[in-house]
Amino acid sequence: MAKQTQSPVAVLMGSDSDLPTMEACIKQLKDFGIEPVVRVLSAHRTPAAACEFATNAAGNGVKVIVAAAGMAAHLAGAMAAHSQLPIVGVPMQAKEGLCGLDALLSTVQMPPGMPVGTMAIGKTGAKNAAVFALQILALSDAAMAKTLTDFRKAQTEKALKKDAELNR
Image (cartoon, rainbow, N blue to C red; front, side, top):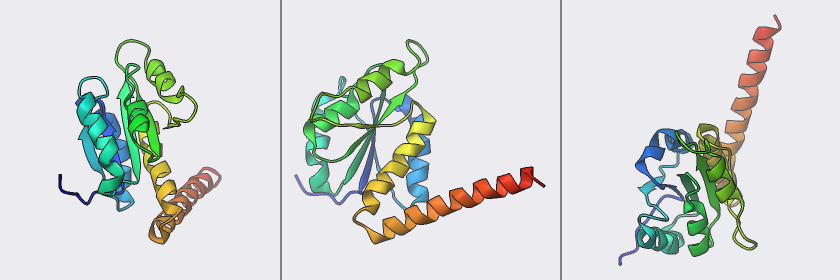
């Protein structure tokens, strides 16, 4: 199999129904200048393909995997089992069942030695996963570090501007 040059960030979803939520992650990554690899791979419905992706991700240039799944699915855990890359889990809020609590618990409750950085349930978690991925990349990439600094500065300025408007 030929080696492919990939983005430093892969965004995986257990189902295409997760895409509306994960668009927040994808958009934030693009705002940072990162064009992510986006795949729909399931730990349960496509386990061989998910395993192959995780196993080959680092060799293909991926440095961080963001994995989103709901209803106690375990995509992030499957990625952690087959890759030494940092895995960022985003629990999805299901329309039925436990409203994402099952996904949160299955993502955060990993066995010793198999960590998954777990974000909040839903769109907030999706956006924070992009920021967390940037923080990881910024440790070894000066351009990414500047992007992170600029992002944090813009957040601060926006909050102070809103404060000033409210306190006129």
